[in-house]
Image (cartoon, rainbow, N blue to C red; front, top):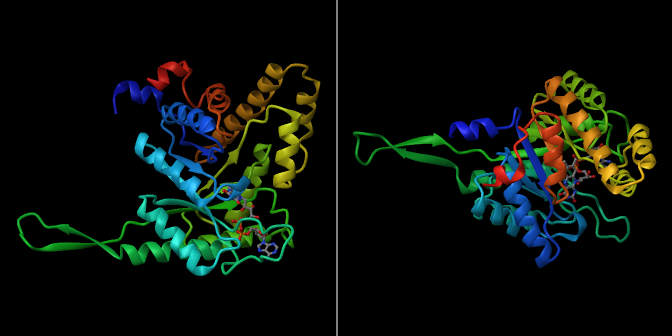
Amino acid sequence: MSVHDGARAPRVPVSFELYPPRSAESAAALHATIDALAAVSPRFLSVTFGAGGSSGGSSLELLRHIRSYTSVEPLAHLTCVGNTYAGATALIREFLDAGITSFLALRGDPPLSGDSGIGDLESAAQLVQLIDRVQAERAPYRESTIPGLPGAARVDSRPRVQIAVAAFPNGHPRSRHPLEHIDALLAKEAAGATFAITQLFFHADDYFCFVERARTAGVTIPILPGFMPITSPQRLRRVLELSGEALPSDLAIDLDVEPTAEGRREVGIRHASRLAAELVAGGAPGIHLYAFNNHDTVLAVLREAEIIPSIPEQEFAR
Ligand code: FAD
């Protein structure tokens, strides 16, 4: 790492979520976005799975691109809903064969209509266990040579995959009781999860109170706050619909009174950067931003929160 690279390094680990492109034109634009995001040295770039009609194939193609053209760790979301045990095992093998060793294990949402059911795996915790088991079967241990002893080998424990899981600061919308999401997180940690990424939330207190409740219940893995800059009332409505979160009235009012698209973008960046700065000040282990396949808004958030330096994007991309 050069001195110049050090000056560019983020103040806390940052990471971004992307989704597979839906057309050749959007793939080209996404590749430029990946270059711009990679230039700020994120800890990982995650790629959604199954959401919005994407398939394992399109996720894997994007993960391969990240692996081939950047030095950033690609992290694969995997869902188990609707899949058989054998199908999920084959899918995990395919990702491992492509060199992917970081995962976000999710249950996924069962379809609202139809009777296809939840599949063989009923929860994310079971998928965490399966990923760990499939990787153990492929690489039960690692051998290294011993200098000065030709033919001799030392057996080291196997390299572990990183398995993230989802966490819900304000509860999961389908939880049957208020602490069910904390029980689910405990189960995911017991199954082998190495860290958690949160569902979006709007206020730092939501995150810190949740982390405190999780720690009291016995959760010890790092909990990475995940959120996004929201730059229009339409996008706010859509993410509330998808996440089941309550309306953040402060952000909703600020977006509603702003007459121009540029003004609404600034509102979104201001709210998200304030949240990022409060999270970092309170000791969050990093910042994970849902990038919506666009780099300038999320990078503006990190610059305004003083998490990355204010170097123009052209400089970063060089
Ligand atoms: P689990 O941990 O198995 O359970 C989640 C919660 O559901 C538990 O907290 C519990 O309260 C409740 N619950 C568990 N079992 C039941 C039950 N039988 N009945 C009722 N409630 C129950 N989805 C995608 O399709 N693709 C993605 O790429 C994707 N990425 C995501 C990334 C992040 C960071 C987050 C937070 C979510 C993502 N999701 C994605 C959405 C996720 O699949 C849904 O939120 C899903 O409903 C729960 O998944 P889980 O892994 O948390 O499940």
